[in-house]
Every structure is written in structure tokens, then in C-alpha cells.
Length: 95
Image (cartoon, rainbow, N blue to C red; front, side, top):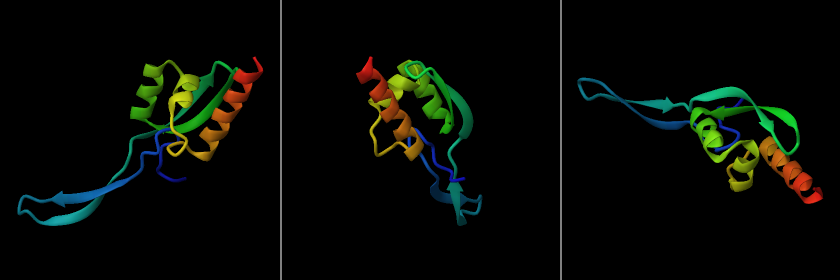
């Protein structure tokens, strides 16, 4: 399982540990990923996603999974999230 957020595309970053003696060693900054279940209002279905805490706050701020995906750029989304987005677009077009 990769350490990449499915909604925001946020992944590991690199940097340095800096000791008191100013020695520098490489380290990784991992995103704060959580396994969550989000409900799609349009599809009436829930989806299990692995997203960052920042993306979860953004989903709540934008008013739910459907509105978040409609505003999100396709490059940031994972394949699963893109499929959900296309399904939502089809459902909205049919309604």
C-alpha cells in the first residue's frame, strides 16, 4: 500500500534531521494518512479511501465527497477516486 493520499495526491517528502551538533542525516516526512469511509450523496453509496487528515478537513469544508471530487483536478486523484468522480458525473447527467 503506497503512502499517497487518494484525494489530494500528497505523498512522502524528504528533508534532514539536524542534530544539536548540526550533523545532517536524510529523513522522510510521511503524510498523515487515515482509512476513512465517505458517503456519496448522489450515488447513495459509501467508499473506503485512504486519505490525509488535511484532505479529510477539506472534504468537510467543501460539503462532502461529491462536491470535493467535482472541484478536484484529475491529476491529483487516484484511479479509484477518478472512477468515483466519473460515476458521480454520469449520475448527475442522468438526473
